[in-house]
Image 1 (spheres, helix red, strand yellow):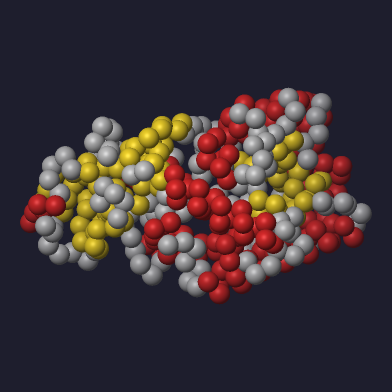
Image 2 (cartoon, rainbow, N blue to C red):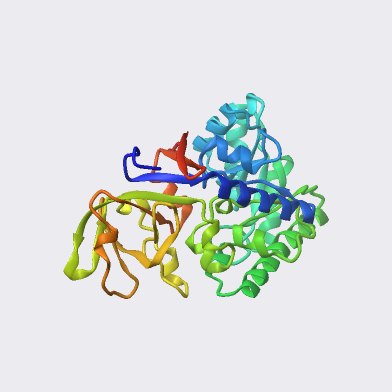
Length: 371
């Protein structure tokens, strides 16, 4: 099945991937809004193509390297969804001259002015969205604020619309709470777009995005596009939020059993935090999944086993809360799979996906990195 793979290895279940992508497309199509997948999760062309209706985009990226890589593979509608700085304009300008429609984001008059000046030096116009802070989670200006209007005025003809990210959705304890965050997200950008239009700005783009709010929002009225990324793989944080079932998680790390600590009730694997990442997102949820849920080689969770701790190249597998193990089930050299807390972070530790097809390791898909 997977005995020929060197461990740790990143496995991607093709059936679950396709199912996750299809569900999100169908949900957003039913609401009449465009899906702009965030490809930072996968950093892979094959996954992005499966998430989209059109091979040319639209996509969301979080690094200039992502923009360049996907442009080289035929993607032409690209939103760079991190606050823009002048030093990155030349690389994006090159993509624009090559035929890409690259959109940037800013959240201050200073950043808007710096973008316009850098674009003038490059002889291009990179349109920009103003980032709105809809929940105090990260960056952005207050919805429908004077600062918003000032940034819009500073952008002038470069202004294309508004966007926000409902990061607070990851902190919710119920579906109802996620729906409330989603409505706050929607209202923040819709009212901001209205405020800009009242000042004479066209504001054609009204963009929201997070996998939890994309999954549970009751309405997208006034929204033109939705950005989401982790839904293509799903993970334990999403399962803890009720966004998916554990069985929907398409990504896992294959590890080998390299030792036993019988008196401690530990199985030791070669998948440590270099393979899983240090992300402990479920620690804030009702069920703490440690560094990941442990599965058999077929991908089925094994009772209540989790990776309770991790060193750089060692993972410690034990029963949740302690207890004895049947070490006969885990001989040296046997294989286990571990489901990740945060798919983006775990995938970032690896250079390729080994595709699971018909229960076996099939193709290897490149996963690139860098900024």
